[in-house]
Length: 341
Image (cartoon, rainbow, N blue to C red; front, side, top):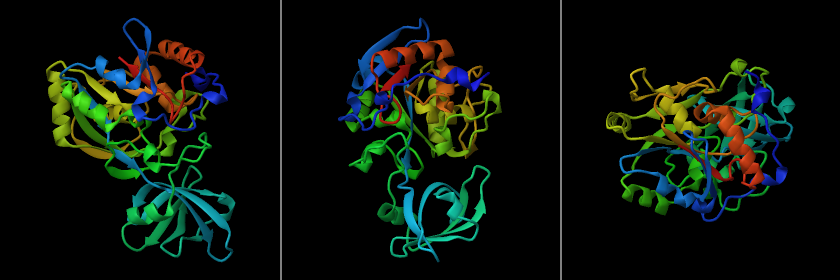
């Protein structure tokens, strides 16, 4: 399967530069797998597609303010780093800019000495392993010194960093937002619960590798970066109970899909566990757990586009994307949403 099969033309002006206000007023395309039909709605109307007994699975990760600007010890050169994920006690994998100035042994200072990073290794993807030294809690240090790591296609400044977080995020650790969840408001979540839908949480800390275009010519040759996930026992039991009772499992975002399919058993059950997943879902894969999913409109040739194509079928997703472009939907992280049922 060729990567170029997942390309499409997107006018630059359709790349959303800022979120819709309020969150739940973005547009919603409803894609029906059974008959291939498409509907155009507003996101807060999504409740009309839920049934009592459905289980809505959300990813409760939070985005780290992981972009930092510092100076190289010895030369004073300006260095930018983006923390990706912890790889050991006090150590993080990171991207650095400019890379040619950040060699093994380089030390970088941030702020007034609240944070120091020393390069102790290289990664196979051109990044660095940093040994961090700081006083107090790292979360507090980053809250003071860091900024939200918005994707490069968003060129406008984000006035409220909370708009790049879901309203239900709890566990700090992602380098990027699980963007399908950005459409939910607290009020909409309550409305969903009142309709008899059970909301179940899992965790996947999102890495940047998820959002990057696939560079391999053949899809099968691509290798995913690993991301930390966790599904706890009470959540697993609620999902398994719903499946026993014939209720639908509706995943919010590709991150929730990837966790559910990582922990899926051949029996159709999920098991509670945590670890690192590099599951790569592309056409030919049959989902074992997920019955419906909520997602955004994704970058060309991305693993996310491949995942939704696996779930809904490549031809139907191509049809939906053509319609989205023609109807002037907003694309990518701050863009509009799709419900695939």
